Image 1: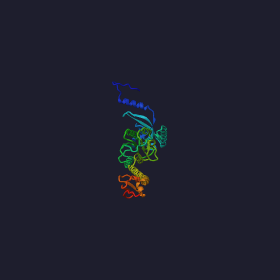
Image 2: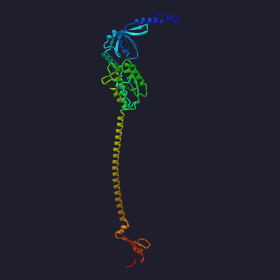
Image 3: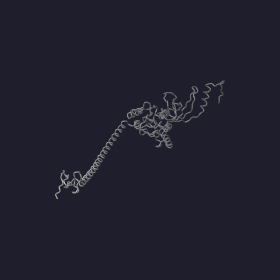
Image 4: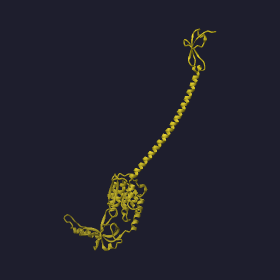
Length: 381
């Protein structure tokens, strides 16, 4: 039925409410998959109320269920539980509120959850989201670490304590969010986007302290996994214990077994780096000293060779000089005089080679090897 209304002929609130209730009452019952939130048992009340949240996005619907329906659920209904609800839309005209009137509620069993996760894992793997070549290397020393964790959680304290123990001045950009339950997926996903947008954040750690398969379900959510795959910043997953493998572990650039392990993998140890530098300095000094010793030995060896060569050349030169000196001496007039010969000089200094060149009575200077004599020519023939 279509109401004809105008500013001059408006419909009353009760009319609109009754029409809405009539239209909604014609809708059939549907099966809905979601997570239970805001559930508190109301003892003695005919109806119990909770919120059914979408598992991927931040959307929800209120649910009203008869106590008998709630009582038939095994295991008992609890917040965060994944359920299938068979319900019919119900509009309460007096308050203008829409809710789902549950006729049956079925908990999604662990087996069904694991089967669903296996199908999702195969789908994402086929798209290449888990491929090793997609993994980005972590920086040796990040400028700032992005940390996504539970509010004031032990996992957060483990990461902070171990990182600061290894590198005391390392700064953090922290996002404390729900890490289980219906709010975990949208808030963790939003935190990933925030940290990925900060240029100074060089690596993002997503951490919590383990838990049951159900507790870790948000970290196998397709929306979150795809958000991490799209990150430009390397992501470290430190969600569960060694035996836990949520899909976030497969898409992350590095899987750490614990929050403590994540801290050790993200930053180097300053003490270890100092020890490495000291060791390298000592090795360099040893190599340098060894090279100096080798060069000194080589220099001494070359010096000794040079000295031997120079000495040999000097000895050869001395021998040559001695030989030449002996030859020169043997050819010199002095050597002739040493053999008993003499040089006769006239008084004018001429060498007398012919007796007829000396007149009777001329003085003669006779030089011998050691000294000289003066004589006068006499003709005694």
